[in-house]
Length: 52
Image 1 (tube, rainbow, N blue to C red):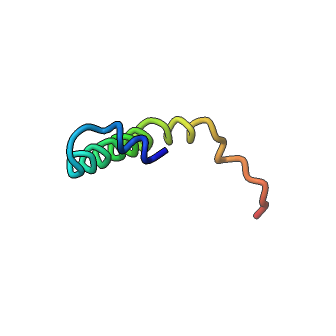
Image 2: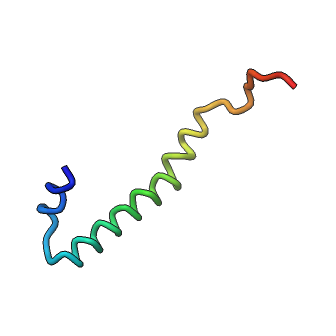
């Protein structure tokens, strides 16, 4: 699977590595900015099962 991604990307190896770094950075930024807060809002953190 990763080999297929590598072959699809255009340019020499350093351009491919740069493109992969940019894509991974965008995906991580998107997860931290939108996906994780959305998931957190759907979970009920106030309901615990362990008593104090």
